[in-house]
Amino acid sequence: MAYHKKEAFDQESVELANIAKALSHPARIAILRLLAQRKSCICGDLVVELPLSQSTVSQHLKELKQAGLIKGDIDGPRVCYCLNGPQWQVARAFFEKFFTDVDACTPNCC
Image 1 (cartoon, rainbow, N blue to C red):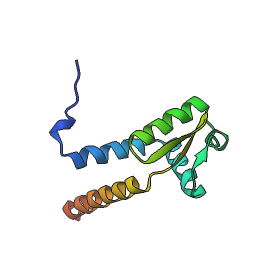
Image 2 (image 1 turned 90 degrees about the horizontal axis):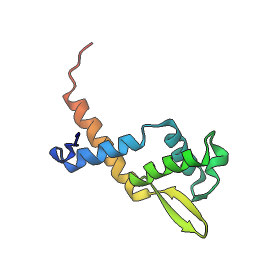
Image 3 (image 1 turned 180 degrees about the vertical axis):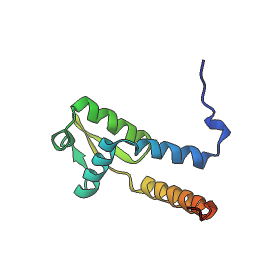
Image 4 (image 1 turned 30 degrees about the vertical axis):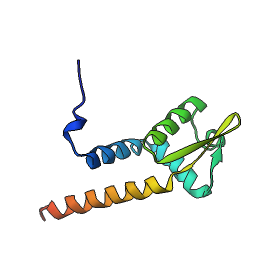
């Protein structure tokens, strides 16, 4: 039986990995770009904009929501999605720190 050793890593690394995983699919990038371009919540229009089925879009929205990158508010029978601004600031800070740390340790080779 396999088990995860996430507890062996610091919380920031685990959160950064979760965010990176959420960003690791082109459909999710497309969803995030659509939400950013609209600068408002989108209710049900995502399927029209993407070459994906409703169930596939829903799965991608679930991944983005679990990572905290988007939030969804129930409006009657539908859910309206928008970017989660505070979590974007956290994600940006994590990535900036990560790239700065790695860049500072990278030798000038090649």
